[in-house]
Image 1: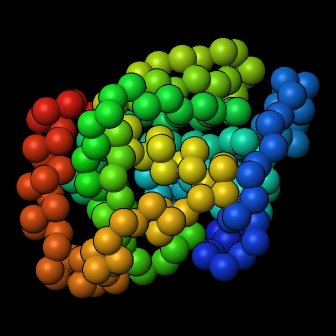
Image 2: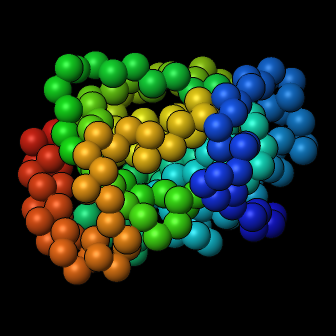
Length: 191
């Protein structure tokens, strides 16, 4: 396993739509090793998720795991989930405002409207079909990662640019209020 370099905003790879994989390509030792690297890179960077395109591989794989994350202490824990060729379907017209950050947009946070209930479909790392629903703040994480695979960054979805803040200023001026909002979302929808 290896920790991969993370592409940052401005690099063209982040604006590409990642390509689908075949089951044969997914089963290859190269792809399986890459998935291990992706998980290790996410853990090393304290990410809640990471997409393949963020480490310069334009293929439709993302990983998500939230486990007592120091960058997002208000997010509920969520088990390691590896998704291949994922599709996210919004299951409600309702939206909540999520204060998002991104490993590819260092030192910046901003408010993004996300659906609090989604269906996720795709494959597991073993090539098995998977389909499940996700609610609450965690639904926002899945939307964020699949956005990466479509060449979108959270800053593209920020409707009010005055919500943009450095991490330090988010912590200083906005964190406490957002933590209260996040807890209300978790109470209302679950994870």
